[in-house]
Length: 303
Image (cartoon, rainbow, N blue to C red):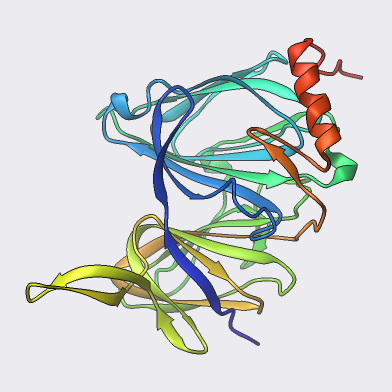
């Protein structure tokens, strides 16, 4: 067994998307080979409707899959193919955009006006770029959860883990998508296929992800005894950890425990031509997609 080294630890950055949704972006619109097959990861949460109620009005996608995981509140969605519905707390939508779809996503708060969700974009290989669009809406009770003897809890959204298999299937990147909680003070090791790219995203509590060099946290500037100093801190809320190769990831939970997404997928290793919500393999394909948007031939008829 070999521990995956921590290649990079960084904080998600505040940004605004859609019609004015405040969110934090862990990665996206950078080097697409960095976490191939994954392209973008957003953490959208708000304490008041003003943070998110403008939503993500009608917009196109082609050549990718979008994965929306709702922790609190809800997301109402509709698309150009006539699909519509609501994702409640704990639900997942895995949308294969394929040849093209127009859709909208409108976040709604809970009884306190709060909402929280994540969206991940996964690339499609050239052979599936123009496949027919497909939805998988998974409700919270259908997502299996495994509880270990030490109190570690893992929700298995897709892929196999600890004898359970997630309900999402037929995904090009063959990903593993886990929602993990490790109790305070516990040290836990998780197996990941050696040939997958992998990252963790911390959204509650804090912990240290270990490699051969020992625990490593985020390098932060803090005030200590009246002086600004750089120190290593445990990876906490809104922190992305990008791992190198190996078949295990180890985390030491902090005093409040740690909850994080652990996501891995098989790299596609193909050229990427990317502009906004459309991801193709060549500039010519990208130009064709936008030309079709302009002349209203973007949506392909169902066969």
